[in-house]
Amino acid sequence: MDFGPHLLLAVLEGAVGAAVLALTALGLSLVFGVMRVVNVAHGEFFMLGAVVAWFIASPIAAHPAIGFVAALAIAPLVAGGIAVVVDRLVLKRVEYDPEATIVGTIGVLYIIQQSALMIYGPEARPVEPPFNHRIALPWVEWGDSGLSFYYPWGLSTTSYKLFVIVAAVAILVTFWSVMSRTRLGLIMRATQLDRETAVAFGIPVQRVYSIVFGFGAALAALSAVLIVPIQQAHYLMGHDPLLLSFIVVIIGGLGSVRGTVVAALLIGMSDGIISVFLSPTLSKILATLLVALVLVFRPQGLYGKKMA
Amino acid sequence: MTLRLEAINTGYGQVQILYDLSLEARPGEVLCLLGRNGAGKTTTLKAIMGLLPLRSGSITLDGQSLSDLPAHQVPGQGVAYVPQGRRLFTELTVAENIEIGLMTRGKSHRTRDRVLSMFPRLQDRLDQPAETLSGGEQQMLATARALCLEPSVLLLDEPTEGLQPSMIALIADTVRAMRTEGQAVILVEQRIDSVLALADRVAFIENGRGREVMDTADLRDDPSLVRKYVGI
Ligand SMILES: Nc1ncnc2c1ncn2[C@@H]1O[C@H](COP(=O)(O)OP(=O)(O)O)[C@@H](O)[C@H]1O
Ligand SMILES: [Mg+2]
Image 1: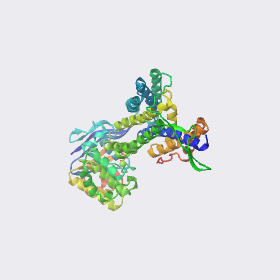
Image 2: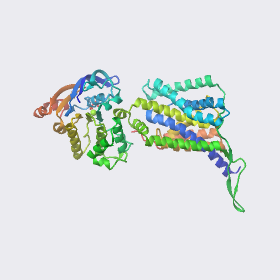
Image 3: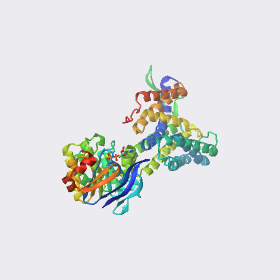
Image 4: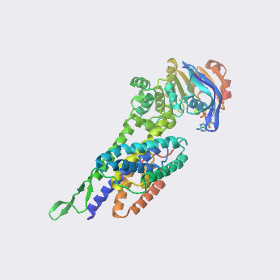
């Protein structure tokens, strides 16, 4: 394949990764922003989403579309529900102390992971996409006879991958409207800015924390349901999303929605492009290097506020 | 409504700050808390808001316990707080800060219009983030946000700190208006002239303990206590 079509293919792959990464990282960023909790178990809620999707979709494998839609609705609820329980049983007990919650969520990580191993098993299992048409993509070339369209061999994507991008954008827009336009969003933003004053104005901060933690886990699970028809469900699949989400949240600026989305695009796209042209390992090395540079030269991240 | 603190003991974590402190704020009255920096005035107001758990003692509003409620239910009883240093939701707009005040007790646009009419300068800045306001405007917003509760008890912690005289006068007018409406006002204030002009009674606090409580008129006649407890 020529460079141009090859690049387009890499960009498309990158966009799918970036879209899903943005959703996952947004969950991590929301939880850190509002609760000041570094949720080390975030990747496990992602994994839960994929595994639950498999449990829902596989018994009705004859109707992949129904299974997928059901998974899309139920998996985030399950992950969110478990997160609310974790909030009540673990985070609340240690009074949201920043260090204790790190240790606590490490414990939660292993509990969820080992439970998945026991219940779901060590196999990687696919979930059928609801639809999956191959779409050949055209390329333009300036040849002897002027501008010409053609379909290069191997330049194609699937309707499902395009759907993932569109769905992720729709979810991001919905999230943004909830945060900026609704009363719940206002309450979450006020709690993030000043917890004590929020209480003094009647905001039930404990309940807000439960909602936020559940919401963050649900976002991770939702992005896993979107990606599982492409990637397969596996009990260890939470590692990469956790690492990449951390990278995104640090680069974007802790707790900043805009920064998270911009950094997810940056990291997701470059991850896709470098993986296609060079190697996936190199792309992770470069991303880690970028984090180091950000921490040295702009510790608050691209859009974060300087700590006072 | 009458707010009563009876022998409260509280502090931050293991550190006890207030010892057997008792106070009473009556409707239609301005009670001033006076004491040195670090005496425990802010801590007293935080305790009233339920932000610090009591080790012992009680806080009641017309006989109903406030200190047994979860902290976020205290403002719902009609206790509004203007914290020291204003503590606005800085990245939220003026309108959003006001909205949070209205939400606290489910007040309507009528309350909002009435409160904003007291602070016309906020009206022109509704869509600005609170952090872009001047110091005086920020104090107006912190006061307006509290008045959106239509409170029966208003707690003001050093509302004139760092303000110009014209702003101080506006805050004083607001306090007088609240008293006229029959609210109980607890005011922490360092400027003795403001205290003497505004307060009905003065309560001295020293090292977290309640000292003399007296009518302002008596204090005017004999300011020696001010020297003793505040050191001016
Ligand atoms: N968050 C806190 N944690 C621990 N100690 C505090 C805290 N806030 C205030 N203190 C201490 O409590 C005492 C009373 O403080 P405060 O109530 O703010 O005094 P003031 O009368 O100046 O308002 C001081 O000794 C102060 O150092
Ligand atoms: Mg103080």
